[in-house]
Length: 74
Image (tube, rainbow, N blue to C red; front, side):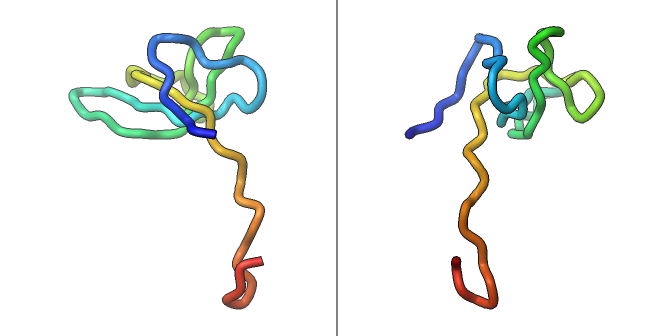
């Protein structure tokens, strides 16, 4: 399944509220993780409302199911 950026539409309210977001602030653009609060209709950075402009968002992939144990991928 290919992930893609969503522009100009609110985040999906079901599932994990944490999303990858592209942010813009003072001319700088970067990618971060923010939480969408559907009832309030805004993004949060920890417990604070996000001050940067969210340009786009996408769902995060599920956590990895394998791990390294003594040099072996299990």
